[in-house]
Length: 143
Ligand SMILES: [Zn+2]
Ligand SMILES: [Zn+2]
Image (cartoon, rainbow, N blue to C red):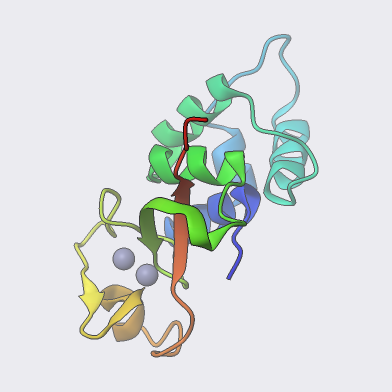
């Protein structure tokens, strides 16, 4: 099951209970643009219409928790070849939390289901037994 960088950021922002406007107030741009325009631009980032500059990723990370490792992997879009996985990071299919980025009150995988965290299960967000989203790093094979 594919997950894009924009979808990942949206899931993590929504899990933090923040709107695009909330996040837009958490960082500045050079040259400065109005908060409303920043919120609109963030919407484009979440729609994968524009790439996310590295400096802004740091600012977003100050605004809401996510796993930079997962974001970097998604940005490389290397998960297209599942036969060549060297490392895989599972993320919750509801809120996209991960092992290094658990939900604020703490969560773990639902027993027998590494695609859904206990917080989301307890809130009825996401059916058990669905696809596991693995954010994967491809093995680099030296020629
Ligand atoms: Zn979750
Ligand atoms: Zn969680």
